[in-house]
Image (cartoon, rainbow, N blue to C red):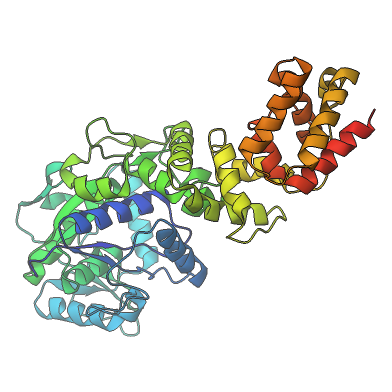
Length: 476
């Protein structure tokens, strides 16, 4: 096996990119980047009934959105191509033939019905079912009956062990394993067989995957031994639990879908920061930049206990990144959410960045930010009647008229110039600035909350702000 570090992520294209899969991909990616290795993307598409091009696209789109780039795989062909298991079927058959010839595997002609009956009998007797080895030394070949290929476990007593990079040493007795199926009758490899052949031929040196695959490691190690190959190191990652403390699943938890978070206005930086802390830590650090992830990540810091999904923490992190990323950067990401609500602004529109600066202290997602910005892009406003009764009185309308006259003459529609007008009107009337600003705010936004009054007027633009002031004055 090659000495250079090579890791892989090997999803099945049977649905969207799961959060657990994204974390596995991230951990492998970071490990490769920190230690100068290669990150391989392999598609295990042997579930012919459920694998779809749409699911493949969803997985690739999710990885691209999270900026988890691969060095070899789909769209990046390399020396170990092809990277789809359905394109490697001849390879699996050839290695099966080698194992059969060496007496380390055999063809099994037992039908699925026979196996089901034996399993049912075992369950009735209260024992775990293990294949009995019916075809292990079989000499007669039933004519016309299809066969699978089974691995021949050693008959002697013994055990198989490995030192997991996360869980430590794990051992299983040979007696706990049976002659497992490697290749189906139609030539499709089962997981424990196909991934070993591919990992070896693709020179994978570290296999990192979820803890649910721990038991799969033992038959895989037996296959490495039978082939005379050096196995990779293994790192089994803790489970991710949903808010209900059950395993995060596609069936029960909407949070499991990576791209749903994109649609909900979560930034990829926030989701990655959140996901990396589901099982890994670096001291007490909560906010972790991409650079820090790359500099710090190691499997030795991955814990064995499950991480629990905390939606409030994700929103907190998302707001942090909304506030700290360059406003121009966030503005570009805000634009599609405004477009979804019928307000298409070109990327160079200065209002996008102004919206970010105005609302990033209050908005927790891009969806919320777009919702807050939307009223500033429409013509006219509906004024809340309670706010009007309190703030659009005869006295305040007189002040409002002065603001309208001063702003109409303004050539510099900037926050300082607009704030200066509010201050001038309030000083002239010998009232606090709030007595002027709040009626203006109600007139132009319809309610009593908004960013600073100068900022609010600037966001509206001169034409729309004057139109709304005129409408409020017309109320009498």
